[in-house]
Length: 369
Image (cartoon, rainbow, N blue to C red; front, top):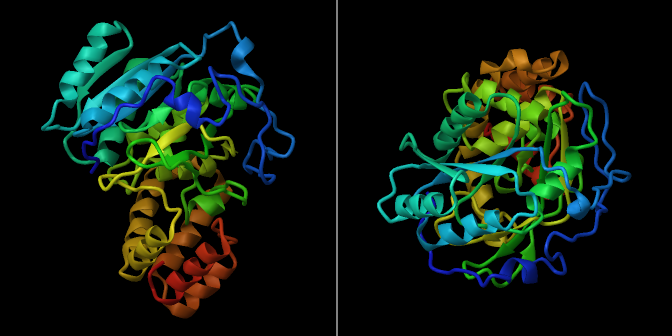
């Protein structure tokens, strides 16, 4: 669970941390390794994919519903809310579900809603953890907003850079209408005072369902769904009963349905690290050793069991090829060693680094897949 931490950044902290990205002005070019998203809608090559400079946009008809799960956010909540208020894309509304906080988080939400009418709707969450709170929010968004708008996920303790929403919308705006698409990005990883900035891990390999089955690269705090993907995910939220984490499931669902994923090398927020992070940045030795420990004690196998069940609940939304891939992965999950290795070797599953790929095969050898 996420716990309260002190610190409110100065007004220009986000601009200073952006390394030159000020007041929504940023380089329109996506840098980094070429990436591809495969599905029924074809291949998106990030080498040639440019993000238009949205500072000149006058039309803000793209409405974004921001889903924020809250629990004991403390003093980190107000800076996050005000970083949303400072977005260059102004057509947004927050659905914030408090999951039974014992601090003043509900009062902070109420004060913001009163000070900025029409900007935030406070809700009472299911009081059953962050993943179920986000599913609750998706169901609420589907009921309240219908299938007409965009959806962004929001953590309670980050600070968004001013052009975050505008950049994500621009990245997906050239895709065909009706094509499910997900935007995500790197982040500036910071300490809880928003200092000691470093870039989150790069994602050198292309996004896709074969990656999503065994690894999440779509960090929820950066994720934006276009209307088609929002409709897909809201509908699937009615079918799912258990999740590991909401963002991994969303990445699996969008790629499994043949949608497009755009991963941007440009960071779009300050990702505050502290002992209460539910997941945290997996970009240093101690965090990686912790993940290896989780794999060895069987956590990865349990996560896969939950993910398989969640995807099977919405299997009719996947492409035929990805349904077959899911069935093969499920068979490998339960198969004895020789059959498990044979099934896995023919699936083409991959993670983003050699070490992570090695860990995948180690999990298979040890019966922890």
